[in-house]
Length: 459
Image (cartoon, rainbow, N blue to C red; front, side, top):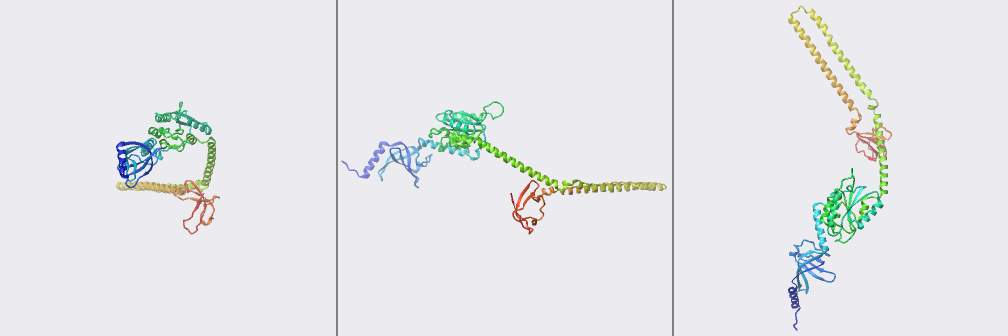
């Protein structure tokens, strides 16, 4: 019998394996994955009863379109050989691809990256849920546990809400198309208003109970994701259990871990709404009372000001000035008019004068009349301007014109006006009247040195 050396026997085994098996396809789960600096990939490929060593050299590893990781189920083709220094047989793979659940997860990640790059999962696309929907649309199997759970929760929390079911297969062939079609059908319904229903729901729940990745796969299809993203009303994705995530979850406006949780998310308890309504009514009454009190106080302040208390006195003073100006103007006109009789007498005494002298006198008389009219017109114009200026000054005396320029009026709680910092004490409550509104404050610090660093704590 021939005696082999170790290396010789190892080479013999290698030759037999390579010649007999050649290139093979093998499927298993990756474990012990290593990526040294050389760029090669070393791993163990195993199933539930055996394992073998695998290697993927750098050139072939660079061509992979999936990211290898421990636990991934793969299928690959390669050459069976023996690594002689260790006497260990291995498969030198040329190509690897995802298999079984691994293939589904690879498809999941690929579609997720694609839709995310398009912006379908962007946070700004997410819409809030209506506070109290009148109608809830549900896309699920009419015979599954999901619809029963949703109905039970709605009956317990808010039995008055209307539920509209759009039945669809939730697993198996054609399920994704039925789910997407049901979502589109609910969106196509008319908005609530005149006419007869059914009407478009205010919110949609799309989901099903738990299951395997394969059972839930319809909610990972691109057709469903795009229908959810295009929905005119907010969509809640409620697929499987809390640990299950689908593409539909990312495309929807909100995700619920279960169908029951989705029903709880979309409606609150009726008693909670009554309590919130009572609190809101109390706050509205309190705020309305405060606003009325502030407005009444402001009206009282305005009514007590001099401008509104005695407006007739200011107007009367200017009327008296106007009457005096009018009397002076009439007296001047009368004085000018009395010149005419004297001119007539002079004309009679000058009858013996020559026609040229009379004509010259007439021209002088006419010039005097023109000058009189011009003087009267100028005088009236100057008095009119004076009156307009007086009216403008009157307008500036309005205290609220001053407030419009940024000034304010500060009073104590008893309504007295604050004129000096020395009149105040720390803790005093003040009311500052602005051009628009009032500010209530408390004195925190007082300086009487003339600086403007006076601070008050606003309530």
